[in-house]
Length: 316
Length: 313
Image (cartoon, rainbow over all chains, first blue to last red; front, top):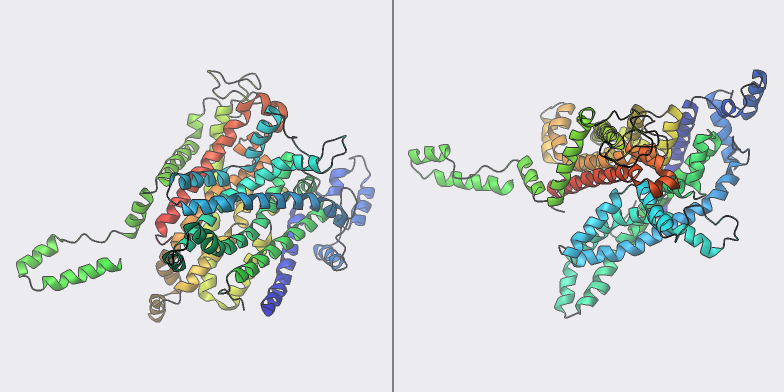
């Protein structure tokens, strides 16, 4: 296991380098730059040149990339083009809300889809199972922004139960309860997508276990049916189910852009949109890199969980 | 397939004992039905899947709407034809938008955008991903290593985030959306095809083809492709649904199809104000509903195809 892990980590270095080069090329493809966008058109061109020089926009591509990369190796992610604050600081401020949102959604998705998927498998081909399949398809097919608008319409504008957006009520002390109230709708939108995708997967995984010989043996021994399902089948189906949630982390990261935009949730997704609109390359580069690292770590975690869940799978 | 071949061989053994006349009759009027073709078998299994048939019907209807859009729109989708934000009436069935354009006409025109994005994106990346995956697995060695690292790279980008960045960098238009979506979607297909070709190329019939001196393209397209096509078709079908969803998401964020061209995504994006949400449901419910129906229908088709192409599952 350890040699495998080391090899995986070594391989990920050139992949991350490649990702950073690709992102850098993309940023450079963009027409215009932040200096042209932000400064008054009456500013003398010499001043603009000086500004560009200061931000390092005049150097050749390779030099700019090298400067960024060596900064990174010294723990420097650069400074934002729009707010001039250190990028690491900006991302640090935004990552908390996104983690809170993503994990609430993941946990909710897990707690809803696992029992429903298992019940679906136990009563497969019944009306209940067909209804669940229907729900699952709607859940994975509904556009998150449409669902978000629908939920705001229902819970905010019609019954006034929940706030429309943000993370805390303006002008109030906020606090835990207030954050939770703001969290419900965006987390629900993300959770619906997860539930839609996972119910059918969990159902299939449980059906697989239900067909195993050892369950027949257990029944033949006279073990009670509830025991057969919860002690013998459920435990064996659970581990492969848990591992698939690792693959949801990258999806949540992407989905958070849309959801954070609708609910004005002050996280990474909203930061991405703001940086795109202000052509803030240093922030976007760092965001891409952080996101890529998160994706790679969650992929690795998924693989490791697989081998723990099923010792027959061995990585070399 | 195998059992029906066996049946044929058994009957041939039985027939040698018959008289020549009877034998000729048996040849002319075969008692055994020829084995159903692979396509027929798949179609038969697909037809048993009711939701998939329903999804297929809806998809065909939507594609037709997209093709015939200019003939179906009651008004010009981009023309100001009435008061702005007018409620539904006999002339404007779904009312008008904030600029006074007919919502129904825009809805129909937007279906064309979705269909075009869905099918051309998938067409582009499935062909490319299949070629890359097949060649990579067939050739193997260092080429395979490099291709796999490249797919690692593309797959490590969080999908929506990187697409937003690229589209904003090179400028949003229908063509750039299609190309960028395809650019970040092919690796999954390449991996899928690679894994099935890796196992197929160990089989005797491929080795036989090689020792007979068949050219590599002949082996790829005549021998490997037909046996690897099932999962590709399923992946492509779900791909159409997700490309449509991605385009809508991009347009919703203002980084997709640009106004005045209508897209279901940018129609919904105009509905983000609270007044529209509360008082003008005709501006946001129809576009979202069409999107949901389209994606749902295509996902049903994909599910039916998966069951039909892989009877084991």
